[in-house]
Image (cartoon, rainbow, N blue to C red):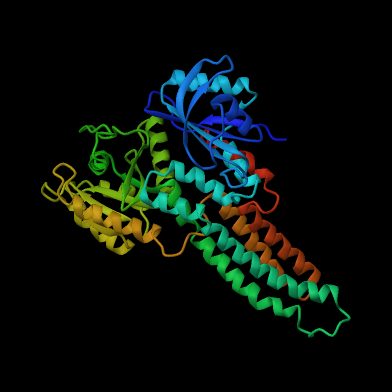
Length: 447
C-alpha cells in the first residue's frame, strides 16, 4: 500500500492563506483525527483543527476529494489554513504524528501519472504551466496539459498499428487466401507517417523555444553600443555602459517578453583581437552564445569609419538583423559599408540611437514580427522538450528502416514496433521508468 503524503502547496512564508494537500489511503482517517469529521465530497467546510492532545491549531476550510475522482486518483484532501508559518508547522507536525510523510518534489503529479490520470507529456505540462512566464508559454503548457501532444502521438501510433496489421497478416497467415500485396499495403501509410515525422522534427525547435525562451544575441565590435541597446530593450540598467571599449567581458543574459513570448537577450563581449587571456575567453563565449542563438543583432557604430564593422560580420547569418547604432551622430563610412554587406548577406537593417531612443519602436516591431513568425503557429508543436525530439528522431529512423525492409515483413514489423515504442515513451505508455525520476525531480514540492 502506498504511503499517505502531504505537502504545502502554496509558497512558504507569511501570507493570508496556506494550502496543505494530502493524498493516499489514510487521508480520510487523518482528516477525521485532525478535523473531527470528513465533509461531503468536493464541498469545502469550516472545521476546527486540533492535535492529538486536543489543543486547537486553526479554524480552516477542509476539502475532501475521494478517489478515483481526484487529481492523483487516490483519496485526497486540502486544508486551507491561515498563512502564518506557526500554523503550517503545527499542522505538519500533527500530520506526521498521524503517520503521514512529507511528499517529495513532483510526487502528487507522479501519482496522477501512475494512476492513469495523466500521460507523461501532460505531467510535464503541469511543471511547464507552473513555470510559465509568458502568454506563449502558458498557452503551450495548457494545450499540452489538455492532451494536444498526446493526441498527436496517438494518431501516429494508430498509423503504425494500421501498417503493422498488414505486416502481421503476411507473417502469421502465409497459407491463407490473402492478397499477394498484403505486406506492400503497409507502404503508403508508412510513407505518409514518415513525412509527418520529418515535418514534426523540422519544426521541433519551435516548441522548445517557446518553453525555454527565444534566444537573441547582441554581437558587434567593442563600443558599438551593445550594452546600451540591451539596457534600452529591457528598460533597466543590467549592463555597465562606459566609453572604454571592451567593458563587457562575459555574457550578460536578460529575459523579457516580446509579443507574448519569453525572449532571452544576451549582451556579449566585443569581437576583436583579444589583448589578454580574459578578453579572449570573453570573445570565445560571445561567439558560442551567438552561434546557439535563434537570432543575432549585429550592432555597428554608424558614426565610425575605422572598419570595425568587419570584426563581427562573419558571425551574422542570413535572416539576422543589422542594427546601425548612434544614428543621432554624423554618419561615418562604416555605416554604408556595413549596410551594403547586410544587403548582400540577406540581413534586415534597422537604424537606431540607443542614447536617444530614436528608432527603437521600429526595432521592437521588427523583433515582434520575427518572434511571432518563428514561434506562433496554428498547429501544436510536436515537441516541447529535447526528450521529445530525440524520441521523434528515433521513431523516424525506425519507420524509414521499416519502409526499406517491406520485402521482409518480419524485419519491417520489428522496426515498426521499435517506432511505436519510441513514440510511446514520450507519453509514458511504454517503459517510462528511465525518465520518470528526472522529470518529476524538477517539480516543486506539493505538485
